[in-house]
Amino acid sequence: MSILKRLVVLVVLITFVLFQGLVCAAFDPSKIVVPTEEQESTKARVALMYVNNAKATYDDEINKKMNDNFDTILKQYKIIPGQRYVEMLNKIGINDITTAERGDIIGVFKGEDIDYVLYVEIQPFVRKERITFFTYGIDITAIVPVKIIDLKGNKYLYNGKFTEFARDSSMIGGIGNKSVSLKALDLVIEKMNPVVATRLPLTRPEEKPDEKNAVK
Image: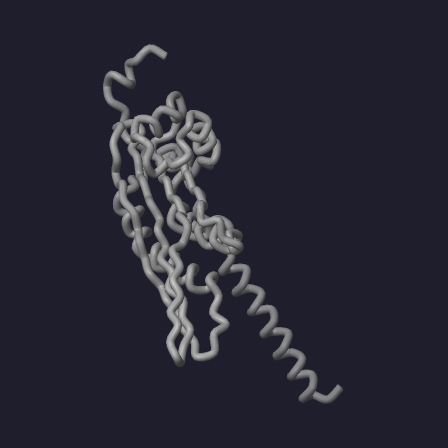
């Protein structure tokens, strides 16, 4: 092997060793931040009651979009799946939870160690066609009621509805409901997320003196 080839091999080996050292230095297990037990215990416990009443052929895509968003905006909370509570309300005759009394919703959480409820419902999309001599278009309106309830304080932190409109058109047709509906949902998410961020507390409510001293 010539001297030049040996030098090239040596440079490659040195570069590889230095690179491995940098990677090991960058990945320092001691620097991984793990929430302490105290931090975990102060996280607000939120029951997520998500209902998809769109009854669309693309419900799976709708659910994925919404659940991915919940994973992002609720990652700082202790999330309790809310389907069981939705079913409990259904069993007592409340199928349209958007019209339920606050007390009825709070009632199904009696005795549960949960601080807040986030209720989000996807209602059926409102669809309209637009046909002109040159174009074919679809208008979709997404309607999403949202409730945030303070269970301990027995009050609404938010009770409203997001109504967002999207449209698409083409000179040759071929537009599907799904793409326009998901676009409308994106607009809903854009408006809903700041409300959740500002209205839903990050930490558990402080216990009142009479609650601390209550005999259990």
